Structures are given as C-alpha cells and as structure tokens.
Image (cartoon, rainbow, N blue to C red; front, side, top):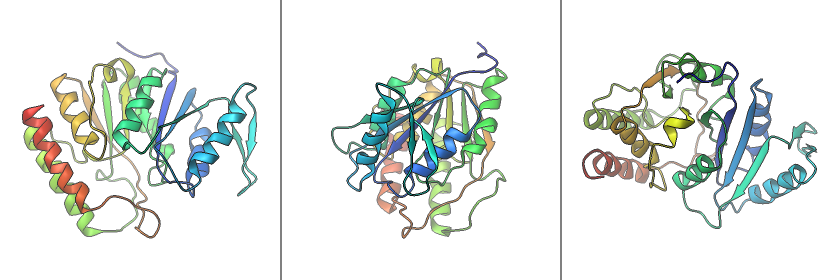
Length: 252
C-alpha cells in the first residue's frame, strides 16, 4: 500500500550521554521541511542530557512554545518533540522499541544523536517507500556518499559483520550495522523485537527477512566520531554482533 503524498514522519532518536550534541541534532532534524514528529528516548543519561530534555519537555506541555538554546541562542520548537525517559540504562535497542511503540507517523526513521548521520539524507531514505517500492530502506555508508576518513579496523569489523549477516539472511546488503533505517509503520509493527543493545541491528535485519519485507539500500553521507569525540562502540560490541548473527539467523 502506498503512503500519502506527504506522509507524516516519526523520527526516533535514542539518546545516552549526548549532552554535547543533542541540541544540534534536534535543530538539524527540525530544519528538514517534512511534516514530522520527533521522539527522543533518553536511556538513563548522567551527563546533563536528561535534564536538558526535561526542560525541553516542559516547553512542549501544556502550552507548546519555543526554547532558546543558551549555547547558540538558536530557537528550538517544542511543539513537535516528545520526550520519553527510560527508568535506567537499558540499551539502544530498548530505547528504540519505546520510540517505535509511541510513533504515530506513516514512516519511521531512526536517527542517532551524535551528529554522525545527516538529516539532509532523509529524502533519499524516504524515496523508495514513498514510491511504493520498499517497506524498509537502509542508508549505507559504503555506496559512494561522502564520508569522514577514520578507522580502518572499524571498517573491517563492519564488513565482517555485514558479510556474516548476509550469509545467514541471503541478502546482499553493504551496511547492516548502519543507524539510518526507515520503515513503513505497518511493516515495523510486524516485527517482534527483543534485543536491548548493539545486536538490535542484526535482530531487525533477520526479522525483516523472515517477514519477507521489501528492502532497499541507498547511499548516505557519514561523519564518524573519534573516541575523544564520544564514540562508544568497542570490540566487545563486535563479538556481541557475531553472537546475534547466529542467534537471530538460526535459533530465534
């Protein structure tokens, strides 16, 4: 079924200790000329992110208004932002599930809060769904979009995990572990998701295949962070990724 010409978009942003970037990513998402709602799920932040989001939520209810950001004096609308606070740190997968449950849009987009992914790529992600060609669209960092040059071994690890995923799912994706994924909401609600942390990417990919949903992949830009800039993924997540490839490929 095709979506409307101007679908309502739900942008789900899981957040954990991103006080340095949360204001900017919200501004960038709001700048996109789309009829949208923004759902921010804080996963137990301890660096001031939670307090900032609480302040933002107070501007959204009961009388929606505009919040002036002290760091830049730029204006952030509060009327299309909804904030959800997890009771403790449960993991990105758990935060996304909460956002998915609350989403009301025809199309749901996943957006990280760390500025590595650019909301200006939204039209590229939305296009296959809006044209009725896809149920799910992955934004690939390896299909030719501009990207910051960083860690070789991160690239190798991503390629190994993507190859392992493709072997068990019989897909030819180039970037399974990308943040940028867009879903028709009707397709997303078909997926019974349980993974709380890094393995969410593999779980959702395996269940997309098992539900025979149509997948497209499009090129996106990517501006990766260094660890000094706040990057969180480590080699431990890679081992968890391999386990999740096996678990959701063969045993789930």
